[in-house]
Image 1 (cartoon, rainbow, N blue to C red):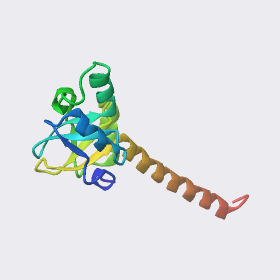
Image 2: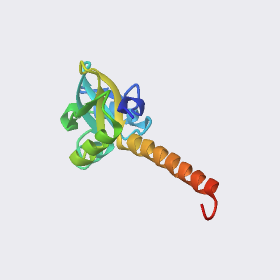
Image 3: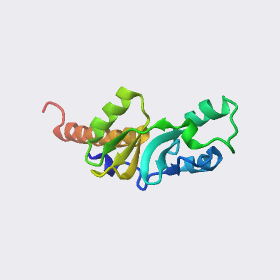
Image 4: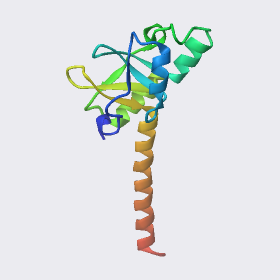
Length: 143
């Protein structure tokens, strides 16, 4: 399955020059523990709850004065035609919990979180298990 089918569309975004205090309420969206950070229309980074806790709160920074660009993580992305299994491998390999989903021109089209991929994989495995159970039940004892 292509990642664009399971990504959050439209993506949750915040501008890089926004203050952390403005970004925090936006993290309440679906799988809302991270945001795509934009400079205008260009994806430049990501901001997660962990980034806020570790780089702002724990560091004693002021949420009303600190800009998102000061604590964000550089952006990583996949294209809209990337397969979900490939995106999962990339995320697990890099330790990233979020990826922007961009089109061939680099425009942000969606936001992919590990929870989206796990949910999609769970649905696929549940379907396979149900099919196997139906097959076994229909066959009966002794084949």
